[in-house]
Image (cartoon, rainbow, N blue to C red; front, side, top):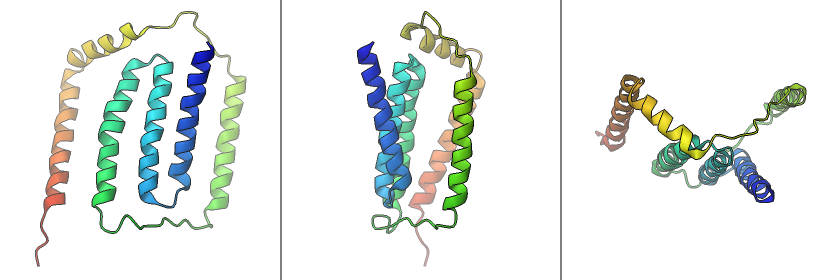
Length: 167
């Protein structure tokens, strides 16, 4: 149990620290790389919650796919290495009020909810095979349509990126 708690605090610290870098960094490249570690920390938290399918999906889709696309987008855009992100101070106070109200609401919900704790947890051998069976039987058509739409979007993005400027 002590090892589980240490792992939880480790992944929570990674997630919160890197998310803070994403939000507060003025360099867009640093923010993009910090987002990578945020996704990794969330995947670790999914593993601790025994949500194996979500953890693998987080690693494959977000870290392996989305992060690569974000980094390529940042690196391929002209003059992004020296871009300094500036935020206006006009939005700071309203944003702080909204965040404080949301945080108060979440803490209130947390303390007023009667949390149910299951004595037995579902093991790793249960969730992924069941989701795989459902994706390849009941939800095969939507799964294939989503994959075709993503393939078309990827081809379109590659065509836009390779388009030569006509002078």
